[in-house]
Figure (spheres, rainbow, N blue to C red):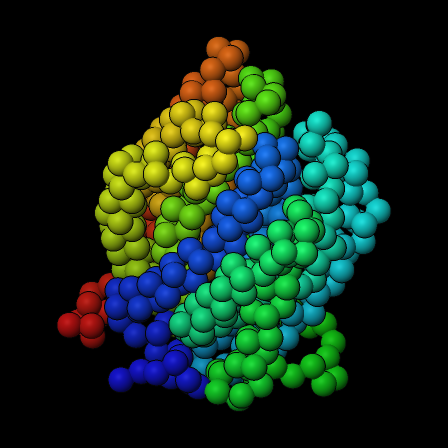
Length: 463
């Protein structure tokens, strides 16, 4: 029987691929869902401050997503590097990779802080803040000034998952959200900080989550052992991390750029409500898509460890199983969303100032929920590419998925109908994911030639 301490964490990525995936998926999904609530909690409280404050969170969200993307991207790069070394039994190499990515993450966070400290107003203006610039600055500046805090928290979560400690990763995410839920009303209303209080509450919650992760590693129970004594950059190890980490980070940056372009398209259709409906509705979708993302996040360390063992059979098995099981789950999620859309929308339209958005936001959810099973295909295929070190392939897949919608939505925006723009989003995801499916099986075929087909041997051992 495995536990969540010490080397036994690695049983969660070295055991039977199907069982390993499900053991990892559940806590990762819970952790990601509650993490997504960080943004949802902000929006629910902020919506009571009016449409301007709600739109401000929508303008800031792409930039926050860039921050999340870089942190998670570096985490994915380290995760595949660490898991591959776990597959070969190289504990020292895995620990060195963890130290390298943490220092890189801190440096990147400080750079982002400096950039936004100097250029926040012109950046948010170009991003479409428009009449909501004051609210956007009040919310966005505190978020971006705390970039190093967020970066460390995101990387810690990825490092815990990389060695199979998915439950510990879940614990720190749940603790962060719990702290956020307590701090939000206190700072927003109790201390009368308004929208700035929402940003400060989020940052303080991340501090608490990071301190929990530090405690786990200081306990000495983890496979990875942090040591910064005599630290220096290892170019080979950094290259191994960044060949996946940079493309993975760029994927999120491109998603944020796509969101900014969508904001501009929506502003041309409905400058008053378009961005507010899209950003709030996307927050709900973001929570739903976290279920798909959890399948991809669980696949990365399992498939990377198998790649370290040069086992094509295990890579193929976990990829196909993630696709089959994930698609079934996302179909169920899509059906539930169609039914529950009006109730979900009430989270953002309960106040008098935002009640008028309810009808169109319901249309948004019901139309966009149709792409959820296809979204799963794209996420899982990208994760498989990342696990075998093909970061650029993953980047190409994400670029296609994120930008296929832009020309479609742009053309449909001439109808001056928000509902038609929502249809463009769904069509873009369906078309792109269909192409991605073909790319995934092409890469599997190349892997079989590179590693040899050990599928029969793996099936015999697992049987």
